[in-house]
Length: 290
Picture (cartoon, rainbow, N blue to C red):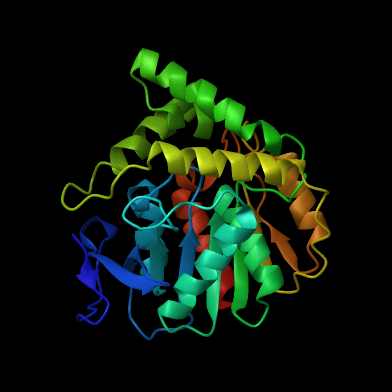
């Protein structure tokens, strides 16, 4: 169930009970959730990873950021509760995200992009410099970055293994195989279950395939220049990311003109910002408010 955009927008204390709203973007309804204090500073828009929907954001990250920021999560075209067909290029996903932001009436935002959401964020920051004030990139890499074109195969392999073992593939894709990594992964999966009412739809198979195609193409493109991205950028990841190898994080920090690198989280992988959610939220808020 969605709540129309023109309904009251109270400050929500928790992502667990934030209502799912919708806004029309070129004839298709885009699903989103909003919390934090409306009108308090530049909105922070969160852009999601491969196959992720509204319910895949760690509530500790969203709630932590929303304690001091206006935070908005959303499903891109064709994903979860949003209508339309999912694009099969990162550039088209970026254009849809910009249309969504403008449909909400914003003329300046901050962006947090995770994994595939980080690819999309890079395109937006470069193509819409006046729209984007600050950027956070987590578990992501530049076009043509080493290992990115292998993400689809890794994901399919983990999904098939997860079906056979009745284990969520995010456990192996997002967290390390150590005892500490396993504990962190299980705790994260439990947090994702905290919302029990009005949950989002899972991604459809056609949308999943479109995203896989877009990621493979991004990974096989000529390496990005990135020097045109002049906004301040905070870059974060775990030290052992097996999906988007962590050297891509170091590469981003080296090539972005105004970057700050969070020291890579120890014994952490692709889901490093979820495993170290308290530390990440503190650093992200410091960056956004500096």
